[in-house]
Image (cartoon, rainbow, N blue to C red; front, side, top):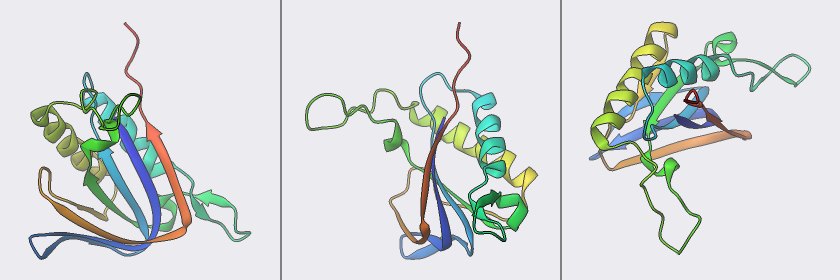
Length: 150
């Protein structure tokens, strides 16, 4: 699975004119399942994201995690992160998980995150979403879990 994470001062997701998810200080995670992913990748991605040290300590160094700062997590499903852009001028989405699997694994990601962290909000799988955020830094990282070889 893939997550593009951004440290934010605040963020929200709107669907059909209604805010469906909103956080203050925290992380926006655009989350994508790839073909062959399973629940173990969702769990590993949540663990990495919650412990990833991207918030400043007293010296201004990135030494604090989302859990350390008790920030919010806004998880947004984003299958386009798996796009193959190596050829042509139109992305191929073959590497992305099929919609049913993508929805199930996004749900698993949210379930695990919510069980481990109190402040979790989400976008809506399959919906046209408008994401607003104030990127704090800017600070943006690409996280990816790997499937075991075999």
